[in-house]
Image 1 (cartoon, rainbow, N blue to C red):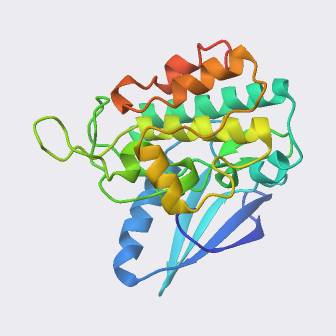
Image 2 (image 1 turned 30 degrees about the horizontal axis):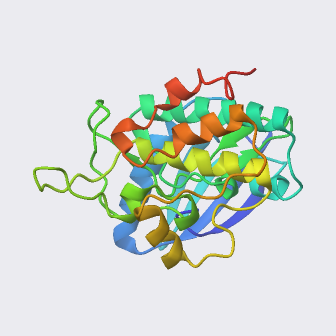
Length: 255
């Protein structure tokens, strides 16, 4: 994810359950920021989000305690190929997680299959919030975020252009809509078993996306999937649908 570290499986003696512990070595000045972010995630409660229990700071490292997801990442099972029914179910779960995060004024910024986990019952859980930022403003506007975060294959055009400029020439930053573009990329990968923009250099991907290019769709493609992807891959973030709106899309409206 956005923050690199080693993950261990551990036993929480108090709760008598297995948890995951992520060990991250960071500079001292980053420790406080990271602890603040973990405090945000600890307050997020949703069945499709990896639960964070807290963190412990030791000199130049942080131990983050979180829910253990025994079935690994979505990236691993994408390679095996998923049938459409499962893709639609996982899409619904992912949208629910993101709709909840956005309602809590949190933007993930690094949604990709490697950051999506499956628990013992194969319930999808979005995790690894290393790039997340809390928005101070509830309104869906370009907000607060100016640094470059995420993985190029899954990045929205406004991230790759560092937010771009508004018509009045002011820098806009970017907001919740970046997660919607990334969801489109994840759905595409679940449907094809390949990353978006396979075999392309990050610089080429950046140029293509910033010029309005889209990753290749499967061929042939069913209308219901094309319609959903088209709604995610809208160049102007102002025109991109929200996670709540996409939950009503025929492709994702399943249980």
